[in-house]
Image (cartoon, rainbow, N blue to C red; front, side):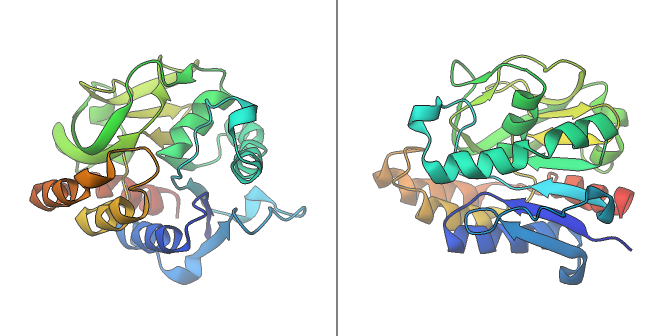
Length: 244
Protein backbone atom coordinates (compact mmCIF):
# COMPACT_ATOMS: atom_id res chain seq x y z
CA UNK A 1 0.00 0.00 0.00
CA UNK A 2 1.21 3.48 -0.81
CA UNK A 3 1.91 5.94 2.01
CA UNK A 4 0.22 9.30 2.44
CA UNK A 5 2.31 12.45 2.06
CA UNK A 6 1.78 14.75 5.06
CA UNK A 7 3.02 18.31 4.67
CA UNK A 8 3.23 20.52 7.75
CA UNK A 9 3.68 24.28 7.99
CA UNK A 10 3.92 24.78 11.76
CA UNK A 11 7.36 26.06 12.85
CA UNK A 12 6.49 25.36 16.49
CA UNK A 13 7.78 21.83 17.15
CA UNK A 14 5.25 20.95 19.86
CA UNK A 15 2.33 22.09 17.71
CA UNK A 16 3.68 20.28 14.65
CA UNK A 17 4.24 17.00 16.49
CA UNK A 18 0.83 17.22 18.13
CA UNK A 19 -0.84 17.89 14.79
CA UNK A 20 0.95 14.97 13.14
CA UNK A 21 -0.12 12.60 15.90
CA UNK A 22 -3.71 13.85 15.63
CA UNK A 23 -3.77 13.29 11.85
CA UNK A 24 -2.55 9.72 12.33
CA UNK A 25 -5.05 9.04 15.11
CA UNK A 26 -8.11 10.61 13.49
CA UNK A 27 -7.24 9.14 10.10
CA UNK A 28 -6.60 5.67 11.49
CA UNK A 29 -3.26 5.88 9.72
CA UNK A 30 -0.29 3.77 10.83
CA UNK A 31 2.98 5.74 11.19
CA UNK A 32 4.70 3.58 8.58
CA UNK A 33 2.10 4.70 6.04
CA UNK A 34 2.83 8.39 6.57
CA UNK A 35 5.64 10.22 4.77
CA UNK A 36 6.01 13.37 6.83
CA UNK A 37 7.74 16.54 5.65
CA UNK A 38 8.02 19.45 8.09
CA UNK A 39 8.47 22.38 5.76
CA UNK A 40 9.88 24.69 8.43
CA UNK A 41 13.17 22.77 8.34
CA UNK A 42 12.86 20.44 5.33
CA UNK A 43 12.58 21.12 1.62
CA UNK A 44 10.64 19.13 -0.94
CA UNK A 45 12.97 16.65 -2.62
CA UNK A 46 13.64 17.46 -6.26
CA UNK A 47 12.83 13.84 -7.07
CA UNK A 48 9.46 13.95 -5.26
CA UNK A 49 6.85 12.08 -7.31
CA UNK A 50 3.25 12.31 -6.20
CA UNK A 51 2.57 8.99 -7.93
CA UNK A 52 4.33 7.34 -4.97
CA UNK A 53 1.59 8.43 -2.58
CA UNK A 54 -2.00 7.43 -1.93
CA UNK A 55 -2.85 11.06 -1.25
CA UNK A 56 -1.61 14.35 0.14
CA UNK A 57 -2.63 15.87 3.50
CA UNK A 58 -1.69 19.47 4.30
CA UNK A 59 -1.93 20.62 7.89
CA UNK A 60 -2.59 24.05 9.34
CA UNK A 61 -0.27 26.84 10.36
CA UNK A 62 -0.11 30.40 11.63
CA UNK A 63 0.61 31.91 8.21
CA UNK A 64 -1.95 33.52 5.87
CA UNK A 65 -1.83 33.10 2.11
CA UNK A 66 -3.63 36.44 1.70
CA UNK A 67 -0.89 38.44 3.44
CA UNK A 68 1.10 40.62 1.01
CA UNK A 69 4.68 39.43 0.36
CA UNK A 70 6.22 42.18 2.47
CA UNK A 71 4.26 40.99 5.52
CA UNK A 72 5.26 37.33 5.21
CA UNK A 73 8.36 36.12 6.96
CA UNK A 74 10.91 34.41 4.69
CA UNK A 75 10.03 31.11 6.37
CA UNK A 76 6.27 31.51 5.85
CA UNK A 77 6.84 32.47 2.22
CA UNK A 78 9.12 29.49 1.63
CA UNK A 79 6.70 27.00 3.19
CA UNK A 80 3.76 28.41 1.26
CA UNK A 81 5.70 28.33 -2.01
CA UNK A 82 6.62 24.69 -1.41
CA UNK A 83 2.99 23.60 -1.11
CA UNK A 84 1.86 25.87 -3.94
CA UNK A 85 4.46 24.24 -6.21
CA UNK A 86 2.56 20.94 -5.95
CA UNK A 87 -0.91 22.35 -6.57
CA UNK A 88 -0.80 22.48 -10.39
CA UNK A 89 -0.18 18.74 -10.58
CA UNK A 90 -2.65 17.96 -7.79
CA UNK A 91 -5.43 20.01 -9.37
CA UNK A 92 -4.73 19.01 -12.97
CA UNK A 93 -4.41 15.29 -12.25
CA UNK A 94 -7.11 15.27 -9.53
CA UNK A 95 -4.72 13.70 -7.02
CA UNK A 96 -6.37 12.92 -3.66
CA UNK A 97 -5.74 15.95 -1.46
CA UNK A 98 -7.00 17.03 1.95
CA UNK A 99 -6.12 20.57 2.98
CA UNK A 100 -6.87 21.20 6.64
CA UNK A 101 -7.29 24.85 7.70
CA UNK A 102 -4.33 26.49 5.91
CA UNK A 103 -5.00 24.06 3.06
CA UNK A 104 -8.25 25.74 2.05
CA UNK A 105 -6.35 28.98 1.54
CA UNK A 106 -3.74 27.15 -0.54
CA UNK A 107 -6.41 25.54 -2.74
CA UNK A 108 -8.42 28.74 -3.06
CA UNK A 109 -5.35 30.77 -3.99
CA UNK A 110 -4.22 28.22 -6.57
CA UNK A 111 -7.65 28.23 -8.22
CA UNK A 112 -7.68 32.02 -8.39
CA UNK A 113 -10.36 32.35 -5.73
CA UNK A 114 -10.85 35.22 -3.31
CA UNK A 115 -8.98 34.40 -0.11
CA UNK A 116 -8.75 37.34 2.30
CA UNK A 117 -9.50 38.79 5.72
CA UNK A 118 -12.38 40.89 4.40
CA UNK A 119 -15.07 38.74 6.06
CA UNK A 120 -15.58 35.37 7.70
CA UNK A 121 -12.56 35.30 10.01
CA UNK A 122 -13.32 33.12 13.04
CA UNK A 123 -12.22 33.46 16.63
CA UNK A 124 -10.73 30.41 18.29
CA UNK A 125 -13.58 28.24 19.43
CA UNK A 126 -16.44 26.08 18.19
CA UNK A 127 -18.47 26.64 15.04
CA UNK A 128 -21.74 24.92 14.18
CA UNK A 129 -21.49 23.50 10.68
CA UNK A 130 -24.14 22.19 8.32
CA UNK A 131 -23.90 19.87 5.32
CA UNK A 132 -25.02 21.31 2.01
CA UNK A 133 -27.11 19.10 -0.32
CA UNK A 134 -23.89 18.10 -2.09
CA UNK A 135 -22.26 17.42 1.26
CA UNK A 136 -24.92 14.88 2.22
CA UNK A 137 -23.83 12.61 -0.64
CA UNK A 138 -20.07 13.18 -0.56
CA UNK A 139 -18.05 10.13 0.57
CA UNK A 140 -15.71 12.20 2.76
CA UNK A 141 -18.69 13.15 4.95
CA UNK A 142 -20.11 9.66 5.33
CA UNK A 143 -21.05 9.15 8.96
CA UNK A 144 -21.19 12.86 9.74
CA UNK A 145 -24.54 14.25 10.91
CA UNK A 146 -26.37 16.99 9.02
CA UNK A 147 -25.33 19.50 11.71
CA UNK A 148 -22.15 19.19 13.75
CA UNK A 149 -19.67 21.27 15.74
CA UNK A 150 -16.04 21.77 14.73
CA UNK A 151 -13.03 23.58 16.14
CA UNK A 152 -12.01 26.74 14.28
CA UNK A 153 -9.67 29.70 14.52
CA UNK A 154 -8.75 31.67 11.40
CA UNK A 155 -7.62 35.13 10.39
CA UNK A 156 -8.59 34.67 6.73
CA UNK A 157 -11.15 32.71 4.72
CA UNK A 158 -12.36 31.88 1.24
CA UNK A 159 -14.77 34.72 0.45
CA UNK A 160 -16.57 33.13 -2.51
CA UNK A 161 -16.67 29.59 -3.86
CA UNK A 162 -13.49 29.14 -5.96
CA UNK A 163 -13.93 28.33 -9.65
CA UNK A 164 -14.74 24.69 -10.32
CA UNK A 165 -15.45 23.84 -6.68
CA UNK A 166 -18.40 22.13 -5.02
CA UNK A 167 -19.63 23.52 -1.69
CA UNK A 168 -19.94 20.75 0.93
CA UNK A 169 -20.17 22.32 4.41
CA UNK A 170 -21.26 25.77 5.58
CA UNK A 171 -21.59 27.70 8.83
CA UNK A 172 -23.09 31.01 9.83
CA UNK A 173 -19.84 32.86 10.60
CA UNK A 174 -17.95 31.35 7.64
CA UNK A 175 -20.01 30.00 4.72
CA UNK A 176 -17.27 27.97 3.05
CA UNK A 177 -16.21 25.45 5.66
CA UNK A 178 -15.50 22.57 3.27
CA UNK A 179 -15.14 22.45 -0.51
CA UNK A 180 -14.18 19.94 -3.20
CA UNK A 181 -12.44 20.52 -6.52
CA UNK A 182 -13.13 17.96 -9.25
CA UNK A 183 -13.63 14.56 -7.55
CA UNK A 184 -10.69 14.08 -5.20
CA UNK A 185 -9.31 17.46 -4.08
CA UNK A 186 -10.75 18.57 -0.71
CA UNK A 187 -10.16 21.35 1.78
CA UNK A 188 -11.69 22.38 5.10
CA UNK A 189 -11.70 25.69 6.96
CA UNK A 190 -12.28 23.90 10.26
CA UNK A 191 -9.81 21.45 11.79
CA UNK A 192 -10.81 17.84 11.05
CA UNK A 193 -7.87 16.55 13.11
CA UNK A 194 -8.56 18.57 16.26
CA UNK A 195 -10.16 17.49 19.50
CA UNK A 196 -10.16 19.30 22.85
CA UNK A 197 -6.68 18.09 23.81
CA UNK A 198 -5.25 19.27 20.48
CA UNK A 199 -6.79 22.69 20.91
CA UNK A 200 -5.41 22.93 24.44
CA UNK A 201 -1.93 22.63 22.96
CA UNK A 202 -2.62 25.25 20.31
CA UNK A 203 -4.20 27.71 22.73
CA UNK A 204 -1.04 27.54 24.84
CA UNK A 205 1.33 27.89 21.90
CA UNK A 206 -0.53 30.52 19.88
CA UNK A 207 -1.85 32.74 22.68
CA UNK A 208 0.47 35.55 21.59
CA UNK A 209 -0.12 35.21 17.83
CA UNK A 210 -3.10 37.54 17.59
CA UNK A 211 -5.88 34.96 17.43
CA UNK A 212 -7.29 36.06 20.80
CA UNK A 213 -6.28 38.22 23.78
CA UNK A 214 -3.79 36.17 25.84
CA UNK A 215 -5.84 36.67 29.00
CA UNK A 216 -8.68 34.74 27.31
CA UNK A 217 -6.69 31.47 27.20
CA UNK A 218 -8.26 30.02 30.34
CA UNK A 219 -11.79 30.76 29.17
CA UNK A 220 -11.07 29.18 25.78
CA UNK A 221 -9.70 26.02 27.36
CA UNK A 222 -12.88 25.67 29.42
CA UNK A 223 -15.00 26.24 26.31
CA UNK A 224 -13.29 23.56 24.23
CA UNK A 225 -13.49 21.12 27.13
CA UNK A 226 -17.26 21.64 27.26
CA UNK A 227 -17.68 21.20 23.49
CA UNK A 228 -18.97 18.02 21.85
CA UNK A 229 -16.71 17.82 18.78
CA UNK A 230 -16.46 14.37 17.22
CA UNK A 231 -17.97 14.46 13.73
CA UNK A 232 -15.06 16.16 11.89
CA UNK A 233 -12.74 13.22 12.47
CA UNK A 234 -14.91 11.16 10.10
CA UNK A 235 -13.43 13.22 7.27
CA UNK A 236 -9.82 12.18 7.78
CA UNK A 237 -10.78 8.57 8.38
CA UNK A 238 -12.92 8.52 5.24
CA UNK A 239 -10.07 10.09 3.27
CA UNK A 240 -7.59 7.41 4.37
CA UNK A 241 -10.07 4.57 3.82
CA UNK A 242 -11.19 5.85 0.41
CA UNK A 243 -7.76 6.44 -1.07
CA UNK A 244 -5.55 4.14 0.96
